[in-house]
Length: 255
Image (cartoon, rainbow, N blue to C red; front, side, top):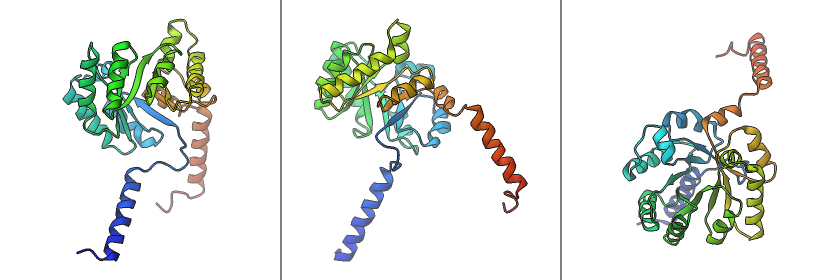
């Protein structure tokens, strides 16, 4: 039978374990940056940077990575991602031509961990109906394939956690992608919603910075964009100069 002191130790140990498992760097703030790829070698290379909150995938990214788009394959992929340090969420996209099909697939994709799996659903009528049912079933939702700022009304009205505008693709279609994303943020703010504008299809770091400077804090981007954040030649040169000075001053003699 537990004594009072042993129970106290159990409680303390449990709190410490939960803290470690759910650790978020104290100065990160509310931002959520995701790595947009299903290529596992890219996860291994870039998650250790510590800047990402999770991984995003969709059927197109699975195909590019040479992976199957089946429920079991996506579940396995999600488990592998969540086992890696630096991955707190995985977004998996459902599929189907009807709301019922998308709902059933979404339920199965998310069943491995409803707290850490977010199901992406296209912001069509069928997709929105499926998303509403998934939300009522306790599934976290990202409405995706968003091309118009007015679609933020759907996400905020429904109570979806995320809505993902395709910045680069909107621009390709002749729209002002930056302005559309900013208006989406204004819409959810005006509706008093906590829905996150989760910007995808990012083509360069300047666009990323422009939106962040206007208060947006949720993005998914490719490994190429992640590496672009570290491509400043002046920084690379300065780091090399520091290393050269360290060698001249005996910085490596004790190693």
